[in-house]
Image (cartoon, rainbow, N blue to C red; front, side):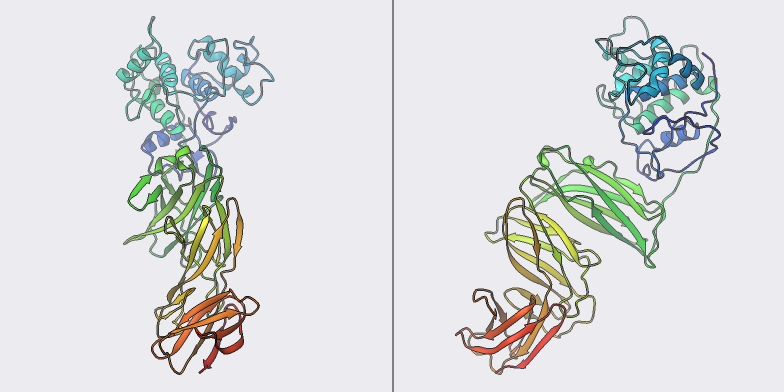
Length: 516
């Protein structure tokens, strides 16, 4: 064994273990901003011990395996890549560690070295199990041996837990003996072992191993005054049963369309009911991420069995100098839910309506679901809902000057003078269905001479006697209603036809003038 510069271990905790030489700088990480072990991660990076997984990400919550532990331990003991190459030719020391073993063959030499020094011990039955996740107590025991504080007769795992606590190795950690160690926790415990804990001979690892520092400049967050936020899911509907993963992407853009780089995105997950919020943020891969060079920040959500058939709210927030911008999407894990898609346009102009809310209320009032910011830049939507018969409401938040100066109501639309309103669709939904809804509308308007005692007009699509909507007359006799493409007859409650063959086109206004 010999002391050496640990320059070649830049990627020991990455997805792959690759020998790197000549590296003099390390990219800053965008996914450790709010991590409690950020300082340890950055310290290990500066020592050349840890590197990210690509795209300026460290992946702090990624689990570690026993193959990775062998290489880290060997470097802390002062072994070199040449030592590991030579040790790979030794006779197999475990039944599952041998040339041709598969994905973890790169670790044979490191495992042999650590087994020979009795730093890492195999599992019952003679296996090493290099792909098994690493428990906290296992890494605590490895560091205890490297530091020279293991004594004869120590009981597993209690004495190792106690020794690790007494040495201070568990400081700053939510230490649970059998819990799986992640990359950030590995950084914390290893940093403590290197800098703070004396070996049995009185020295510290940092004093006897000649680490060659890597240039590393942490990235700090930026707050933009002109930022906006888009959010999307790679999948809105997942199979039931738990353990399913969806990726939530938030993209922060400035007013000119350029990315808002290195601004902080905070993520939240929860299940909302009328009188209770069940937070699920611990199911997110991380809760804070700085945006990358394209303005993106991503997290994953992993479902629990108790999530089944619940609407899971996923939100992203970005700060401004005076407030926060909040955007959300809904996710469901279900084997019976349906997907409802379509396109929403400004019924007056045909322009796509972006960021509109879509809600579903069952006709019996037993269920209500609200999808905020459901439509994209083209006005398209794709939302998830459980089976049932619904009143589907698509909100209208018209971005231009209102096309009317009064409020108008009908059985299937509301148009307010301030440009708001909604379109309502009666919608039966079957289990597992994928349904496309025609939400594109045009405008029919006009007036009658006298409102009378029945202030409703009845507008029937030609060729379908049951496809009828009502338009409420205002006190001055005017009416306005949003209708799908088609040809309609306009009549009274008595069945009298006032105007026939009126053609409606989506995104345009048909004015029939005074019809009585």
